[in-house]
Length: 136
Image (cartoon, rainbow, N blue to C red):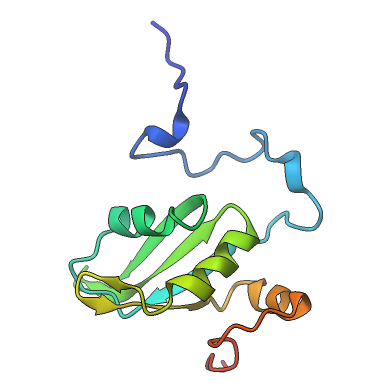
């Protein structure tokens, strides 16, 4: 029995930790940096699968993480979407903010753990949300 999958992206539970498998393509200082964005104002019935599908239109999504309340397990109305490359993440911030999903206009911005805001500044990108981010 052959256990290989010719199209690993087709599985619903794509492997989360594939470190070292063909990732040497873009190694100029991206090692350890996540290209993730914050997605807020989500309807409570929004699923990770829906977010993956919507944001895959912008670029290759590696991971979607919906945030839930630790005590109740209910969604808190926001998520983080991680992209394979920084250009796709910046494109999502620019183009998906105010996108309507499940009757709500989602907010898309830099995540606090992301290097993307600095990269956008270096590239001279005019992103409307960049200056409205709350400080920690």
